[in-house]
Image 1: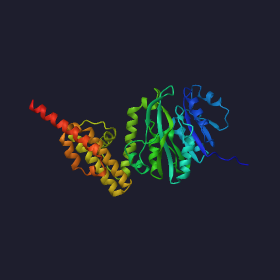
Image 2: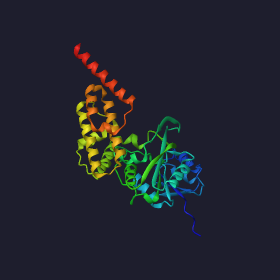
Image 3: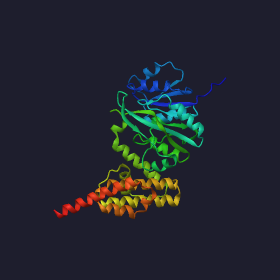
Image 4: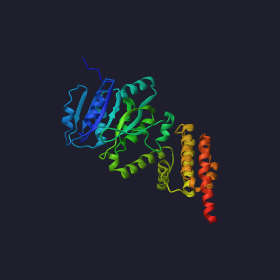
Length: 348
């Protein structure tokens, strides 16, 4: 009699992960939902990672050892190709899943067949596994997430549960930096609904060996490549400078000036016009997102004084969101204070 396949395959790629892998494996084996296999793919570790993995006698653990060091993206794809579960749960070997993670996520996908992928909020832990007090709260509604992905990644890889049926052919695409997950979420979000459960179900460890510490500039370059492809899909021809403005809008990292405000408004309006023609993103949600970006830029630029208010109220973008009275007052106060200060300087 053929053995029944597990409901979930938990994919855990490993390369020299001996420092934290015990915690990662234990967090899987302690799940309240027990119908899973833990598929660990070792990418030719040179430390004691494999010895630690083999020390576990749980029959749900399956180990694949690469014949040579392939790197993270091919290793993830080897895992996808060998997974047996209906659902694929992702967990990196230095992170942890909270005990109810699988139960909560499978329960949600069972009740919502139109969703193909679900993440969660994430608590940040330090090298010793202690909470830092920071929680990544991904609280956007599902219809808004495809538009958010045009600006930045909106999921933590170690929080993800995916229906195997919605994973794109070929799995992860290869990039120079570890942004393969961001690209994957975009492709999945193009075919099915995605969301993050509004609760902490994963712990993400920040430590000096994290990829993000080592390759920040390369990651930024690859993020731009991914965003550029999305812009092409909605019919936007864009310059290098426009792509820089796009990233500066998201990061709120720009030199405050009237010139940048004008450039940012022009770019956001360009996004609106393209989507208004293509209907690629759900319009009410995407328009609202553009309006929120515009408001944040104006608040960041409040030091320019009354010129910000003039630009803000003359822009079509301002009508895409219902701005609370408190936010309106805050923007007015910031701008008026700067206006009075500038006049005082001129007078003295």
